[in-house]
Length: 278
Image (tube, rainbow, N blue to C red; front, side, top):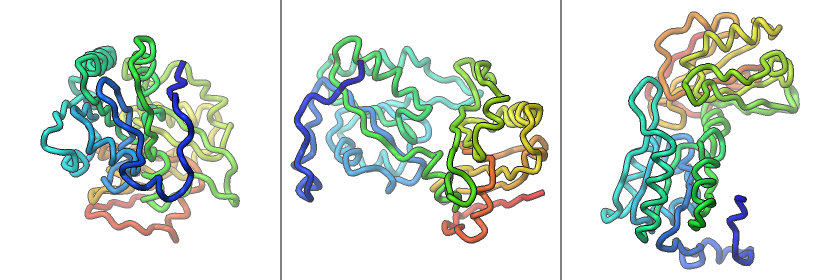
């Protein structure tokens, strides 16, 4: 269904870095592109190429303004952001917008924070395009669950602590805590759990994990505004996380021993920083 590659593999040498050797961004097509976790320098060369070729950019709320500023002035910019607790466009309407723009002959860049296929609804948007035969390309991005934590000095895997990790979303389509999650299984499946969009329901999620038998002394870190000058980090424990208030968002939450590596790997200094542990 999502077999979108229809061309031979390109030559695997440094000529591929030449702008002219990138795939053509054809009129009437849609590129779903990951914008990375925050800083505009964390996009791929192919994403940068798409930004310069697009006729219209349909972008999320979390896409950095500095990244949008790299687009040519002729490119139309359309906001399609979703933020918890605020009026947001419906997913079906965003997909229809992409379809209409492509059918009008535009080069449509759907610019999404992080990676389009990591809790980014990219699969739904690509599916809508595929069903109507609209050409599309997926350009992966650096997920905040990887790059955002790296900017906080937190490796999500380390051979001294864990060989597995779970990625979890903190809310479902309705905005509530996901009802289909087997919390008993999640609590014990991996030493490290990385949670996206979990701040709103963090108290409920932590209580479910504790009730399932997860150790309340487990380290928990929250990285807000990752990879930007406003990055801040809160460190606490699973048992104490419910008392936190006014946690800056967007944020990524990591539960498990890997946040201890911040003591030696905390390399990025943001303009705003907050530390709590206890």
